[in-house]
Amino acid sequence: MTRQAIAKHLTVLERVGLVDGRKEGRQALYAIRPERLDEAAHREAQAKT
Figure: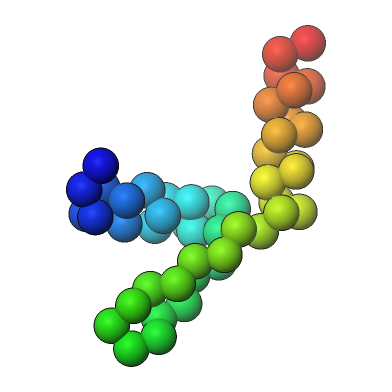
């Protein structure tokens, strides 16, 4: 996977609130938001039942 593709995926994840991103110089750093990931997984599990 290219850096550009990863950057686009991370931008989408940040937009929907699953990760937090911040710039440090030339780098963009991302951190997973576990509470939001848990909520999304719970909703997905409910949708399958």
